[in-house]
Length: 289
Image 1: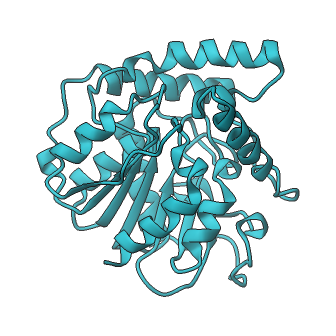
Image 2: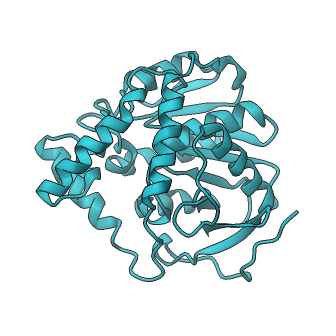
Image 3: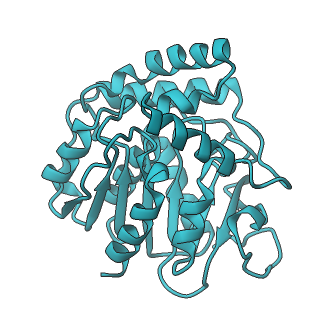
């Protein structure tokens, strides 16, 4: 078992103050942060396309960490983590398992958002003894409708953001309604709360590798979800443009122990951030049941 390279530190009062640590995974340093009580099964958060440690909503992390040990991390080659970013979801899943083992855990819960939800599904199917429970948000199964369009949608909305001098997440994660715009601004402001020890932005080469992995996931044959026997809570907004919300309904229906959180109204891909005040207690209830 590998040992984290950083020395033990007190549990931070908020995710905005959580120190960035690193652990060696087969000679490659993976950056991570941890927050919350030491006891119990840890909750590993698997991030979305292009995201680094600072892209997790502090209201979600702090809310979950009130009762659970929460660990966020940068994928290989992303942010402060070393190595080259894989271009398949399966390789990302292998890295996730290695990262968890390097921290010394043999039983965890997973929260996978978007691309992180793809990775979580592979980990749960291939390592059934490692994963106790799983939450899938804004995500879908391999071969799910519309997933192969993520690249074109991302490029289009990123160009729109450049022209309008806005953050692409405003278009990709939230609806275009007045309520959607208002909650997008609030979310983007929350992401700026951490002012010290901020993570590095993803590189263009790593973004390309992730987009290739997502496209491959989207054009795969439909997944056999019967292999995933863990209890799974599935959540999303009702108007997800990136991973169409029909995929959320499909996951909940086809997973043997799938449980659907009612789709959040006037919400898109960032539904769990927009409705963090509803999502966090529901997630904790599910994990503690």
